[in-house]
Amino acid sequence: MNLFFLYLEFFKIGLFAVGGGLATLPFLFEMADNYEWLNREMVGNFLAIAQSAPGPAGINMAVQTGFQAGGIAGGCLAALGLVSPAIVIIILITRVLQAVKENKIVASVFSGLRPAATGLLAAAGFGALKIALVNVDAAVWHETLRVKECIIFVCLFLLIYKLKGHPIIYIAIGAAVGLITALFF
Image (cartoon, rainbow, N blue to C red; front, top):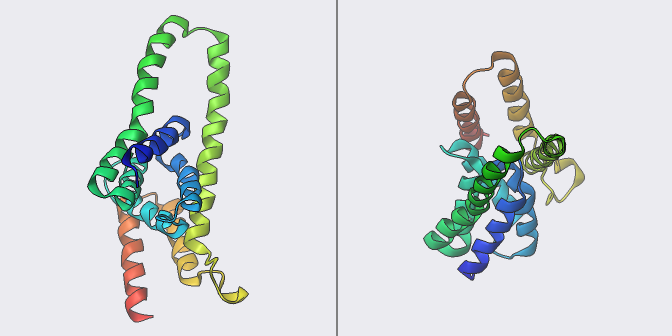
């Protein structure tokens, strides 16, 4: 893979993925649909690793995807491509906002960006849910739902909702339950 092209792909993702790391998921799914070196299952696995590893999920997924495409240099360039637009935009916006921070048009723009970011995050969440809980390659319809994963999801969702503990606890529980069920069931 051409490393400059990889940088540009992630620059484009960084430019339009408003809302943080999970907002990169729709772009990564599109990339998986367009390139043979990446598929949706891999994006789902990258997401699981990125959410479990320290650091921002978007950067973690960019590094994994870049590494898949171009080794260590690909991982570095993908991360750099993802953050480059943010660096430039933040510098420009900071300078402009100092001059127009009381302007109603600026306030209106931010009012429109919040729901757009929420929509991107919701789309990413539904995409991740589909990958985690649905087997689109199932031979028969009744094997489409990944029952073990659905049970783990519901149990952890309820635990998180009720107990509100530290996320690392739930990540560890999910990993342990996944390992145990893979070994014994």
